Length: 333
Image 1 (tube, rainbow, N blue to C red):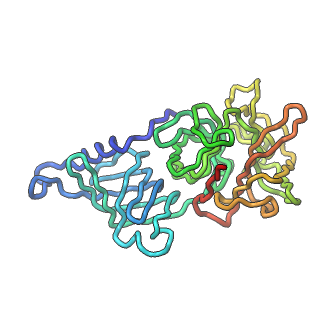
Image 2: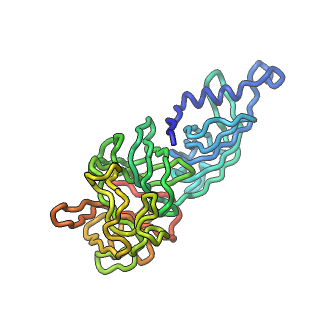
């Protein structure tokens, strides 16, 4: 699948302005085009009481359908920015929205004024893979697995990840991602678009333990021999049962080090999460004792090549009790 870079705001403005160019009979008095109705659907990447910035999955102006994967700014309907609710106070990053209203232009300037706005929260998820490109607004992710939330054990995808609202770490410190680095993205997905809350990148791919929690004893969690709903250790497309995989394998052509063999097969895997940050449902950081059975967890860390001891560094857990976007942000020292 060939990636097409995210379109710039200027390019979108030109495209929309072109769509607003009307034949003479449709011109208003004074030679200015009449306003046309627009409808936009997509993910909110920035919000305030007055405006929303939306990463589009679809955008129509009049009868014209315009390119997706663009970020547009929309003036919110009167009254939407008032009150005390989440939708009112502008904290809608990670929500999917459908907005309709009137589109007007003056020269090359574009204005989208909404009369209707419907917002729906999306659950936090994590996405693991390799950076295949760096864009002005984020990165392109070639998934090796979609491991968290509703996408646990889903197919591999090429995702357009928007990082303007995210904290980004490379090898544990604040930085910028580069091509071919392994990343885990925490955020919300709509189609092939993701708005990220956090991005953790590694110059050397980490080992990954993922599966359903079968037992919790103190700070140790036991993962069942399942990756999502797959009962086999490898389904042939890179998905694995619980256990270590990934890392830096010299015999593998996969940049994640994942050669299709899970060393633990279907066996249960124990992981000691003492002092390891665990992000639950993309929100609060919890202790291992706060986890319960049947929750899903993804743990990243490294394995000592001499002792084969796995040292976890960060974990992401999910259950079915919270379907809201991620609110977690890393705190740098």
